[in-house]
Image (cartoon, rainbow, N blue to C red):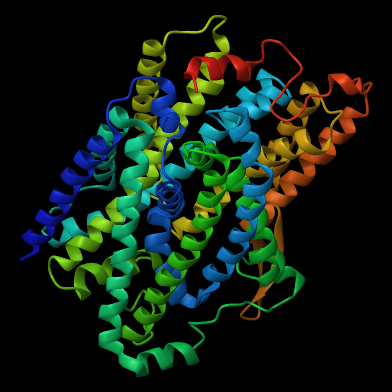
Length: 525
């Protein structure tokens, strides 16, 4: 009967590629390939943002986290994310939309110059390569479990390669339109799968199961331990979740091209702002759904630990239930939902990395505007290049253990502070020039590498003192502070520019800025 699950999955893989290409239409220009000529509906873009950021890390890690004691802490974290998105919608999206950019880093080019624009873009693609490598590996976990059911013991590496090949087909041909439409469909599938799992689990555990989970603390929303060490090290401490989460969202949704690119596809500034804020609401609903799955699984398994269940880690919990606790075909649909989450984040990353490479890095070498045909071919070529590299990095993570969701957050901690800090430096320190911004950016990366890898805080756990890393949410504000201090201090070492020479938002005071050349090359409005 398991063959029916495979049929469902294969049909889904074929259908999603065909649907994505049909809805995308033919791509004629680089701007169409990257931002869909800015004609996408805001609600579709909002769904795409959600599908891009949640991915497999959310789908498989959050139920396991809720099961093992996090409760509804991720919902608490989502409240901070909503606040951060409101700030982004108000302060940063107007810069991008009014500037007519196809990349978030074109603002840095117009404010400081091509050196910082290229540096920020290189930082983005390298960070995204590592983070998406973790995500792509995570997607192979449930697929391997399913294949093991049939006695087909495919390695993680083989699964990663096949998944990448399928995803790159519609991403290569359909561009951002195919990515956004397929993201919206895939979000519906994996969120619907979570709701279906909740219904099945509710039938198994009944009202008594809800009561047991409630009294055991699995529905706890707010972590009110205000000890300093706990606040600095726990992702779910109330100040960390709300304040740190808000600043983290400002970086991930305001300075990360992966998300900004989707907002740039909307028809107007107002639509872009609606898409951004609505995505925060949808993410909160998703976090609640997956946390509820974890709480009900705790009642379903009678509180057994992962070792007693025969599982290697918390990330195996939800896939194990899908394969062994659900009827045939239904389990196939939920595995397809996990595949959808994986393909959504992967396709989004490939298109945004190609966008940033072409618009921010490669194009700076051109002194004349290349033809549309050349830019479109280059965009597709870079999509293939990044697909290969992504698969290689994912294979490198295939021997890792632990919670992949928190691993992804930590990777972002190396660079998000520098990226957001660069934008804020441009907005807040008006006397800062290109040299100041580059120095501040590089100093921040160096400092954050030390903080992430070496700084530990002693935390009391079960009567013992354990050195613990700083919570990922605090890494961004630390990085922002370093950038502003470094950039502000270096700006004091030179004369302030004349008031007339200070660039306004979307301008750089030059007649031939890098942003102008890139916008022209990307195609007319």
